[in-house]
Image (cartoon, rainbow, N blue to C red; front, side, top):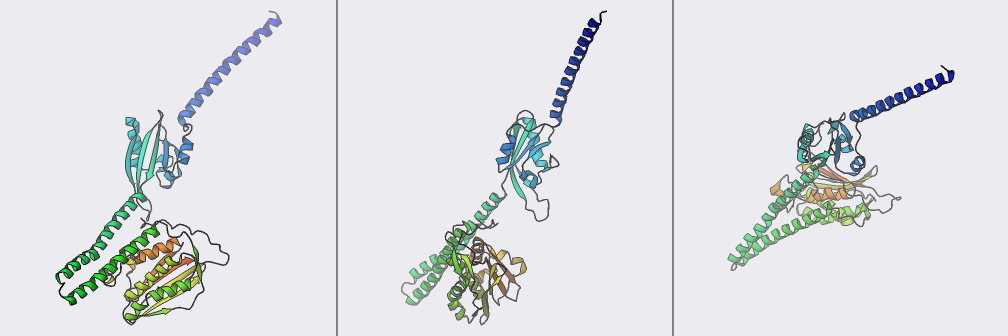
Length: 391
């Protein structure tokens, strides 16, 4: 055979073998890609972006219930761990979607994993995503449920508190009508009616003030406030009641300290603290009021020599309508809202209020506010921090 034909034959044979090998490699690569997609599936286009902008918790599962995508909320609450759903109730909802092919919505209670963590209530909705995936979305209902409970309690408390003065006024009105010919009795009933009307007016005013504070409507025009002036007005407003019981209100040295806020609100808060100190102090005792600077915080302290407060009640005294001695508080005209107003006033000014007390040793309430320095500029006060008692 001619050498030329040998070369041509070898060339054709080589090209045929090369083409066959190429086809084989291409098919193998394609099968490998398909297998890789089965082993490591990817999230459908656009799902990443959608989950990224959702405020709710988001999870995407593949056909084997592996977590392909999870939002930060799902990880933070421990719903997803090691690329699997760690909460059996949530997994059950996803299983129901695969079984029925229909969206599922259920409420799930998520117990705190660590001591001190609150129990969370989630509204979980799962639905098919294409033919192979399941998307799980969850909204945290804990805060809204808590606020609903607080509102219900608040309304119930208000209804209960209003019944007493309104009922008393109604009874006294009937008594006056029946004793119209007895001037002495009419005068006595009229004085009691005035007392109940004043209590009703005070309660209504405190409810309005507390509602404004809780709605963050109080600090629209913050200004420079002199703490010495606030203390002077708080003492002056309680001087008559203190004098009637021979309670001495001792004022500390002028501090020359200033804060940014609203003068009427701060005065009202400190008036409530001084009023409580006078009311719960024995006759011929002493109440102290003073201010000092601790780091960058102005501390205004009100100290009494009263009966004191048990340790387990230190946090509860700031709750609305909570009274250590209900009968005494009502007899002195207390509404049960004074310390709640102090608490929310402090928070709306970026501060806090604390209590030190022991039974038989009196109490010290301290209103803490950020100090205003010479380098400060008058700017809006930050909104109050979220609290469990807000409405």
